[in-house]
Amino acid sequence: MNRRILRVKVMQALYAFFQSSSTELSKGEKELFLSIERMYDLYLYFLLLPIELAELAEAQQMEAKNKALPTDEDLNPNRTFVDNEIIRQLRENETIQSAFKSHKISWAADRDDLKRLLKELRATPLFQNYMHSEEKGFDRDRKFLMDFYKEIVSESEMLQNLFHERSIYWDHDDVDFAISMALKHVKKIKSETSAGGNLMAMFKDDLDDRDFVKNLFRKTIINNNENTKLIEEKTKNWDVERIAVLDVLCMKMAITELTEFSSIPIKVTLNEYIEVSKLFSSPKSKVFINGILDKLVADFKEAKKIRKVGRGLME
Image (cartoon, rainbow, N blue to C red; front, side, top):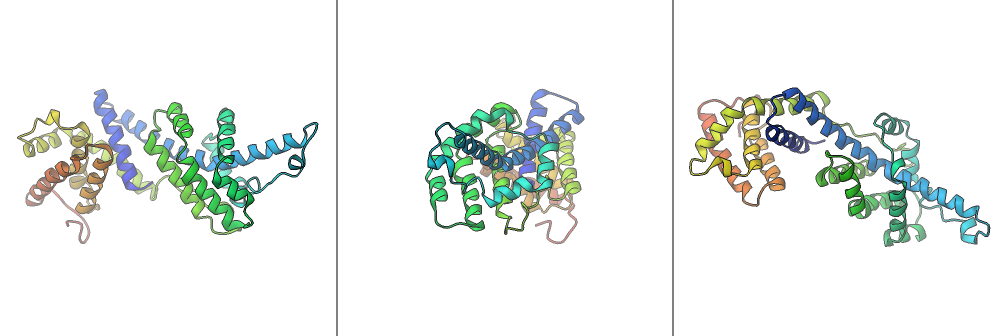
């Protein structure tokens, strides 16, 4: 997961922490890491999805063969989807299968939804073209699966609703990001000998990113009163309580990152929180937040409150 996603997860955890008036940092931190782990679970769910659909399709073909009066089509089904090479690799990859088991990832309780999704998939031009195309082989199989994630899974309201109902940790952004992770996984499978590809790690750098998440969460809380005063000084013509809660939270996180994280360039911090504000705040928030943070950075530099280790990090 990239740092922007981690910042968003920290922001959500901080919002929940401050709204609950809790004083238990460890409890809030535990919830934060649980939300990150649950997003990783979503990636695994979407990686398992085509395997489950192919197995369901094969089971239906077997049932059709065993009918009292099977048709020629029943006896000689089109196995293009069932035998998709990428799906086969995912199914036979022991590491991936082990992850499904250890994370308890299963679609067993959602058989009716899978049947509905398979029926909808079969009716799409994407599926029909794939099944009846004269072009065969690995590249065709991979392209179909990539299009499956982009055109079918990402647009499925049924899947969105299914995961929203299943966990408070899964919202639209989580689902979209998990789908993009599954799609990226498939893109990295380059040949018939790829063996299903390697699972993406939860963090790019496990220790470094875990420390980043933990420290950003804790230090933003610990420095909350001081950061509130800093923001109030730069918004004297505003009632801080009337400023959007997420705008204030973004600025508090940015202040913490600017002053407490010596290896993150100033420009990166400013750009990241502007982007986060675009996703979660009002259209005018980015201008407001950028203006306040620019003033604070100037003050911090003058007071030598920003200490960055590394060439160019102060820019």
